[in-house]
Image (cartoon, rainbow over all chains, first blue to last red; front, side, top):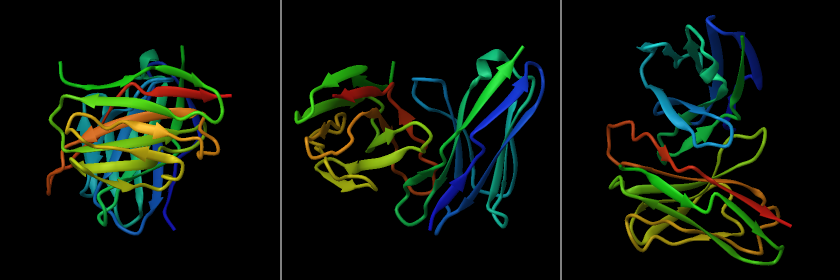
Length: 110
Length: 115
């Protein structure tokens, strides 16, 4: 079967660093996306990894290990506006469709 | 400004009525998608279309129908056959090019409540 697992909820402090993990078991793989979704709004693209390693983009970084079926999103210097859900999605290589995790709700406290 | 629009933002219907959700994009994307989002669950694909006049069923197509008569438009009809239609519906579009990541861009969503 196909499965993507993320923690349901995480809490962190403003100014700190948080790592959101995503593990996946899919029949095919053509890349992994991270999206941010504020409550009641549309998801917005954050990052894409297709090769193993770390991709850094400002305060956000994303890591992928294909052999372990594992990715994480690292958020540094947390701001209150980072309070949102973070969605992990795997792009299948069979039909180029995304399989989505349920998302991780990140709560930032002052 | 390029983007995706969905209307309306909130929609209320009585059980047994069909309802059509609008989705328009001016990003010149070939592919368009409809997802349903329920609390505690990932996005689930209802239908997708890679080209005008063609579309494919996703994982939960039962009780839904779509059309793709124009590149810019991909309306979704929620029929009375859909057993649990109350949900947040998201439309997305993407390029459809081999070798590129083809990230999906989302509209603001329509929250449908059926009573």
